[in-house]
Image (cartoon, rainbow, N blue to C red):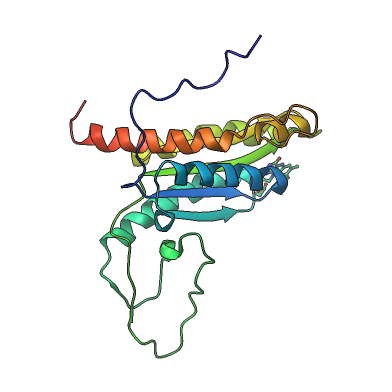
Length: 212
Ligand code: RBF
């Protein structure tokens, strides 16, 4: 019998073309992270999100995700409100999918006119992979990260998509990234996270305008 699990398709058409999305991912369990990141990116683009409107940042582990998401959201508001002349050479979320630009300065910095994105992030996708080990770390990190990511989205009003796998075994994690070692490759949940980001970002924009 086929599984009854998983999200039903959205009842609204998903259009990512006006949206700006941040992906914040951890680097623990990199093989799985890389697959999830690829699935997320492919789906975001398939839903119309422009490459120039996707920003990717990484942090060491899942425990770092909530603060990073919070700062990325607030930084994007600073960026959107900033003038085009960046005398300080500061925030650089405009680097999009390429490598971050070094923020080093000479002693007499010339005013650099750069094109600053005028739009804060409409959604943030937090991606991490927690795999249970022999100590209590797994439980503590899962619990605190889950609660904190929820807090970030409620505090900022910007959807934070919960792309954190909490797997009991390596195989569980691999299957949820679509790269299972057995016959069943599983499903890449990154695709669902991208769709959730576009849907929640669109809803949030509409609801904020009092449109239902
Ligand atoms: N981070 C993850 O993203 N996934 C893990 O499975 C994971 N397991 C950890 C296990 C131990 C014993 C420790 C000490 C850390 C682990 N971390 C893991 C890293 C954690 O999220 C964080 O980056 C570090 O604790 C530094 O704050």
